[in-house]
Image (tube, one colour):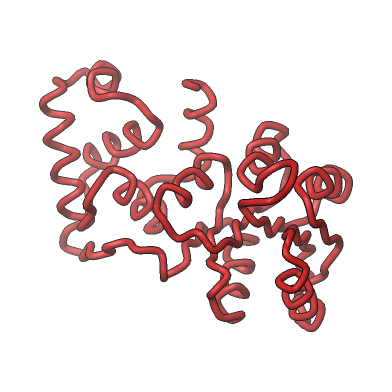
Length: 214
């Protein structure tokens, strides 16, 4: 059984999700919360396998709760369940510690997959989030491109990444340009999300570095 905490400040949304979770054979709904403070208290006390969090809630937001879970190193998988599909919300959630991002318009089958994936440590992004996932097997990133993209994802500017890798800043930019092209990404945020989705860079590695540079 996958133990789940559900936090959403919309009563109808929460009632529908709770009914579905309780009818699923492999899920156990251990707590429900309508605000961020209650959600955090229940998470700290119960340590559910999965926390399904709305981004916008009274008190603490879902993103603030995710940061606390990461800071305390709690063994809780975080899935953002939200109406916001813009990449900046996805990226903010990922940087806070979320391993899943599902839109409220998604079918239940998709939420089921997200919960199961995240419980196994697999990163999940709702397919409806606009990502130009055009990478082909023949266009896999080189080791250096992966390394440079990983450092960029961690928030290092070009000159710092260059110093870390003992290469020039121009070479860093060349590797990034090549990586964006292979991924079919239109910007850095999209490239990072695509790389996370593909397992090219690892979420835990990104978060550890971010904590050290914030």
